[in-house]
Image (cartoon, rainbow, N blue to C red; front, side, top):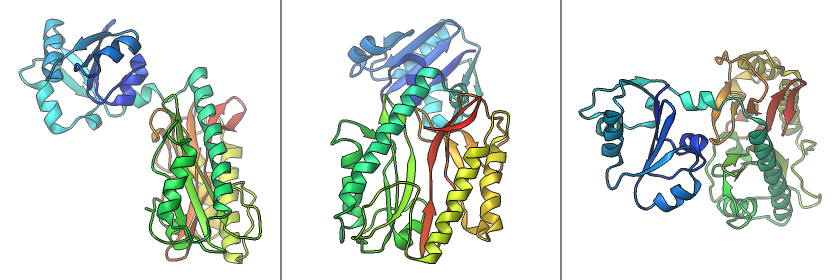
Length: 341
């Protein structure tokens, strides 16, 4: 299959290197990494199984010339990765026929090999260690705002710049935790506040993703284990429902099941408890080079789970104006079921 790529992670998967100005062409047995002079030196050092081509100020023109020279009639592209303007620049005066195929690179990457799984597992372990260190910081964080906690979380998890974050951490206190992707505010952490923390790091470009909830108290040692106790009965009830939903979905996940069946396990538990309208997102998503990959663990996804698939399991209940609870782990599918990374 002939195909063309522009997404950085998709290109990295093909040849071991990428940058923010690249077109990757796979034409039969040949591959071309087209970039500009800023990246050629590193590309020549790191790119594997592809010819590095310096495209000057117009890599689109260079890509067109290569397609014309090789008399390419059909080529696959992902329309989700190209702007209208970029595609026009690429397709200008070409007789090649471009076939749109959404997420075709992620489809190639949906099953991780052993090396990738080990890398993701390492990312998850480093991320979990960062959670432990952040919990120690939180112990004396009374009156610190979400914005400052956001900054500190990034600093701790990324080891002061040694690593990159998978995404901007979510640090949410009390009613802000009822917003699944809450932005940090000036709300301060107070005694008995509910605190939701969702964060991850990148290790060798592969992502981790984890969410935990705790109740901030000055009297007890804080930790991000799943064994949490809350003074409020309502908080405890919601937390226990979400935890049961998450652990049940992980326990019953098997190779050969559909992604939507995993979602249903978690959703049915929350629904039977009367909180189904407060579970407002899918149960999980694939993770790899991108923080959101395939499969999608939702009620609409018919993907058959296979060994080597890596995804999150993260049900949640969000009570507007009060608080929210989400518990998230990454798992990999193997012959025994879903293994928490």
